[in-house]
Image (cartoon, rainbow, N blue to C red):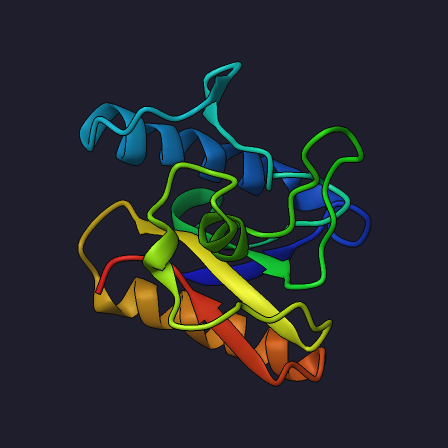
Length: 155
């Protein structure tokens, strides 16, 4: 198993992994769990899947995606219209999206040294895959001098 961090400007040659991850998100969150989420060309994607903002950590075996997660900096600004999004946890707390506002005890951070991890999934129940993804996330965050990471996902 390999785990790769993919960002549009840096590892764009591996964007096929992100596309497969987005397709698997649809399979898991929409098809299997029945969540009412946005679909685009067969992918589950939302306003936070902006190529200039989001980073993806994708676990794969010879290109076959096993799982992944999305990372956003907590100082992100997405859009410039009536609603400007930041990141999922903060926008839920602000009441901008349809996730309960009591998701946090206090105002979520907006620091460049804070990150959000969401959409973590694996295609099979495997602690090895989850551990590989989280280890890669930690390595990436360490390299970016992150001070904290908020997480929204299964227990």
